[in-house]
Amino acid sequence: MYSPSKHINPTGFDTPQLIDNYGRIITYLRLAITDRCNLRCSYCMPEHGVETVSHGETLSYEELERLVRLFLQMGIEKIRITGGEPFVRRGCMDFLERLKHDLGVTQLVVTTNGVETAGYLKRLKALPISGLNLSLDTLDRERFKTITRRDRLADVLETLYGALKRGIPLKVNSVVSEETRDAEIFQLGELARDNSLSMRFIEKMPFSGEKMEDPCIDYGLVERLTNLFPGLEQVQTENGSTAKEFKVPGFRGSLGIIEGSSRNFCSTCNRVRITPQGMLKACLYDNGVLDLKKLIRAGINDETLLLKIRSCLNKRFADGHQTESANGSAGQPSMASIGG
Ligand code: SAM
Image (cartoon, rainbow, N blue to C red; front, side, top):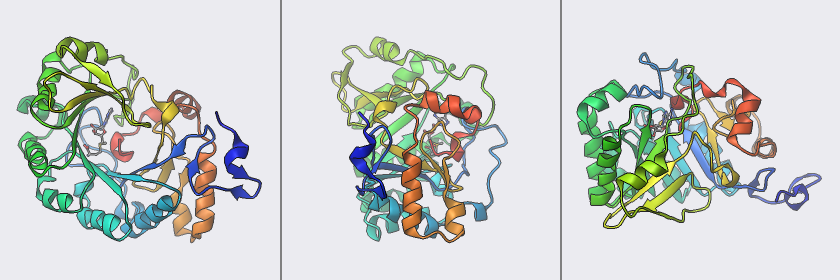
């Protein structure tokens, strides 16, 4: 249980590690490097897209690298690059190479929709990337067009099979909404039968950029997977994981569920986020707890910035429900402006 005296002394912080007020050690940073995207998924943003911020309001690669260096000093072990769609930002691949080779990020992972990723797989493998999370909600071309408002399923599949061919560790993330039928879940699940990948189903969350009437829907995912895949058995996941993971007899890969709407994993939360505009988020459901861009552009030194970051993480809520109650309307922004 949390004991402030354990890790904080009267003059500041006596451990390099980033620890919150509930004793949760932060080891995972999610960096959204753009809010622009080449798809228009209906659960993520309105048809016309999100109000994008100007390039000048987005953290530059130089600013991002400074932040990564600071977070590495505080014991961050894993960094996820996300967006918007990270590969629509010019220079993304070079940035990834600098993170790996110049800054020494050990666990570097990327979340992508796969639309323009196939052309980068060779360089991603050479990094080497620790893992690719690929978003894919359906294997049906028409459904794909309806969900994403774009006809790009073939490009995504090229990324999927290209990553598998190169042996890049792959997780496929699929958002389950009211429209998702069992047949679709079954078809996606079969990807894990035939391939060595993790197929994860994500509860739709209230981040569509528009007001949602009933944001907390129970999609009964455990029951549905249990019915669809006989012999399904839950396995232990690493600490801090937001996914419940399952093995199925005869499957080369695994199945998973991410209960983002239910928020059943906050007690082991090990992550922080930085938005494209440089807001530090201590929880997916907060409105941003520190304007890093403003501080950086005002000329703050590293030491003071580190103290400010630590201090924010020392005022976290116990879980996403409490954070949401404290922040009211946090559920309306698009996931593209947060990074998932
Ligand atoms: N463009 C990249 C991609 O599609 O993977 C990275 C950013 S995207 C915002 C990250 C993840 O958030 C995707 O897997 C997407 O499906 C998921 N996502 C977006 N809106 C969501 C929502 N309302 N509920 C649950 N997941 C959502």
